[in-house]
Image (cartoon, rainbow, N blue to C red):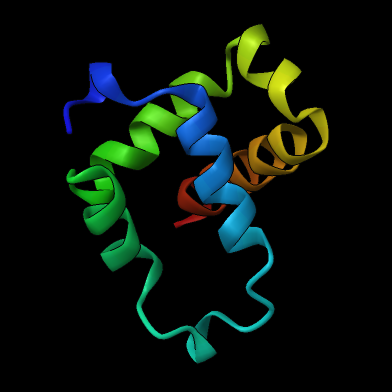
Length: 84
């Protein structure tokens, strides 16, 4: 799958699935493996794509609570990287 073929609904569905995973270590596959299987792209590209979609109002309209949570997580990870 190419980035242009990934729909916001697909990303929201994927993120909803992983938001329910209480302990990622207990999952049968890693999140990065699931990104590769689901979207057919490298995890780094997916996270860049996700960050760009988090700037879109249409993405937020699909699931405002999840989108806000993802945006906070993304911002917190950026702050962590700046400290290093």
